[in-house]
Image 1 (cartoon, rainbow, N blue to C red):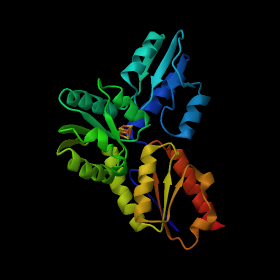
Image 2: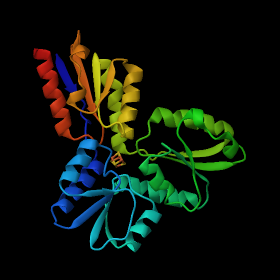
Image 3: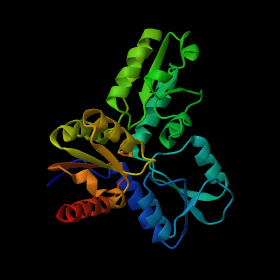
Image 4: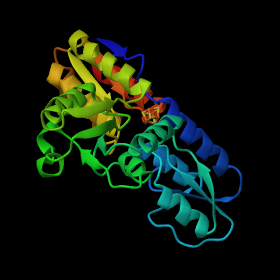
Length: 280
Ligand code: SF4
């Protein structure tokens, strides 16, 4: 049995940066909070909790505390509220996400903004929270809000950093039939594009594909969907615990791709367990 780990498997730059910033703060002896999950991975969230970083759902007044803004960013309102409640902010928003903020704010001056992204995703909410007017969010080609779009002559379309190229193209095809001057400003990040490119070949070259990442991770979900579309024998697991020996029957090559917020440690544990299962 051969195990092939994708070159782009695991942490992206933005996630690694946010985790390193958090680890440093955890050892500073200060009172440190994070609003929501620092990144969408339960193992990372647990590790930081054990190091003393407290997760909060709402911002309430505090004294002498630090608030980390997660890799996916946050709205301007969140920043204002945190400052007014007494937090010192450490902004771990991925610089690539901040680039999207700038692009969105510039485009908003002359355009209605449409975001191709997941309705409830933190990054999408963060982008929305940079704008003066409410953007239209479109998740899939099936969910185009025709009534809102039908009178629009033009629009600027930006994308959540982890969107799949196929989803963007399919939405744009439909959108252009309603708004002829709908212009796409593809704001997917380079890491996402590299991962999505690699996940198109991995399922063709392997009998079984394992996608590793938390169920809350948008980029992991996208990797799973693309791989499953090419090779039905694709499994989405969170850790080695989810592996089943029966999956390895008649399997010679296993491809592995971990989502952008999955630690390498989890991938190594999966590989170790696969090797043990194969020997049994
Ligand atoms: S996927 Fe891209 S934009 Fe999102 S955190 Fe990673 S590097 Fe940043």
